[in-house]
Amino acid sequence: MSTNVLSAKDIKRQKHTIDASGKILGRLATEVATLLMGKNKPSFVPYLDTGDFVMVTNAAKVVVSGKKSVSKKYTRHSGYPGGLKVETFEKLLNRRPEYIIEHAVKGMLPHNKLGRQMIKKLKVYKGEAR
Image (cartoon, rainbow, N blue to C red; front, side):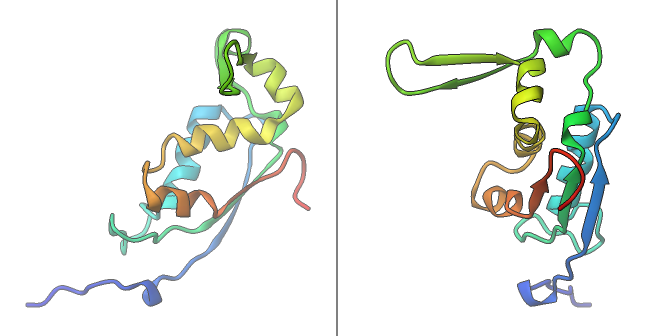
């Protein structure tokens, strides 16, 4: 018996379009991360990027459960003393809704070169696709 070894030239990629309107952020992010990694395919191997291209539309219409819209915080730091910026989910959703989905999905991908390669196949749009 021999094992079939998958190589980069054998990978077949598809395109998926997901509408985020009315969907819960975490459940949407897991669905997108699974498609980006290729875990839904029988040819999945952890050392290759076998995932598909994913396009998420209507990012501004994503929802979170409970009081997370006011209590969930996103932080960033400028690198200077006193440079911590904190923003709630609600304000960030109005200003930059694409970032919310990208941030959630990126946290679910591997934290290495492979994960950085996978996140490049994700496109998020505020409204309908262009």
